[in-house]
Length: 133
Image (cartoon, rainbow, N blue to C red; front, side, top):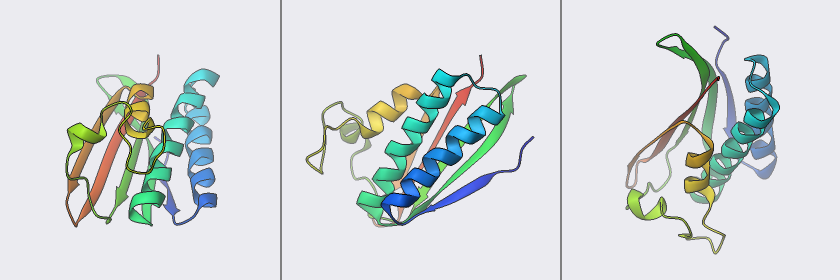
């Protein structure tokens, strides 16, 4: 197993760093080019949300293995305002930043597993995984 690697999100540049970290880790774990792009795009969306809504947070990328399957796990954590209505933010087209509203639902579609834990005024944790074919 490879060691977990983390990126602190505080700026636009950190979003690029997290995206690159995820892509490089996926490549090292044997994911094909298309899955590398999917993983990098999901991480970019999640890092952007941390920056926009919480200001700062962490993204940790690591190899995982379950039931003989290998994959990549991304954990996104912040201590921001939290998400009041997770069902609402997971709807396509919903946006609080006048964006396209593709961030969280889009990231979920790009990954195999996607879980959100959030508490108002305490922060949000998103754990997502992609399994190697």
